[in-house]
Amino acid sequence: METIAIIGGGAAGLAAAVAAGEAARARGCAVRVVVYEASDRVGRSILATGNGRCNFSNAVVDAARYRNGAFVAAALEALEEVAGAADAPAPEAGAAAD
Ligand SMILES: Cc1cc2nc3c(=O)[nH]c(=O)nc-3n(C[C@H](O)[C@H](O)[C@H](O)COP(=O)(O)OP(=O)(O)OC[C@H]3O[C@@H](n4cnc5c(N)ncnc54)[C@H](O)[C@@H]3O)c2cc1C
Image (cartoon, rainbow, N blue to C red; front, side):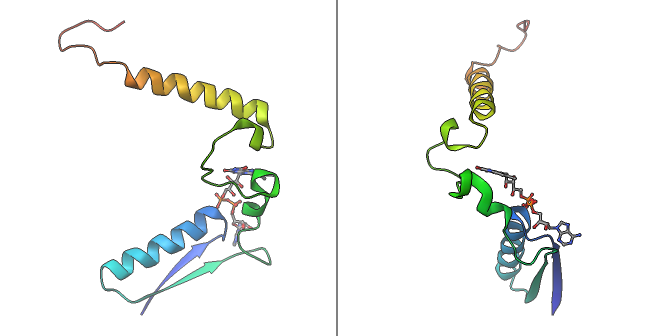
């Protein structure tokens, strides 16, 4: 049996471990996925998210729910501008872009 080693049991490492296991199972492969974590437990920083309320993939994205609300509010505003620009109709072929 192959072994897949994941270094670091944070959000990324844990997600990678689940994805690796699922991908192997989908291919009918038997693998052992091992997460190596330097700390005494995995997912420690996940517990710090949302001021202790663990708001990864929050269903209601609200700047007030984040530790640095002002920064998050500015980031969300910038994202809305980018999303608005992406929704704008593409220039027609041959038309000059601004
Ligand atoms: C105070 C605070 C509040 C936050 N709030 C939010 C929030 O509200 N919403 C949100 O989406 N995000 C929030 N974040 C950010 C979020 O926690 C991080 O983006 C996320 O945890 C990053 O995940 P990661 O797996 O990339 O890294 P980490 O969570 O840092 O995981 C990396 C892991 O690897 C381990 N490691 C490092 N080196 C080694 C090694 N050599 N061998 C073995 N293990 C090792 C570490 O111990 C750690 O457990 C917050 C972060 C902090 C610090």
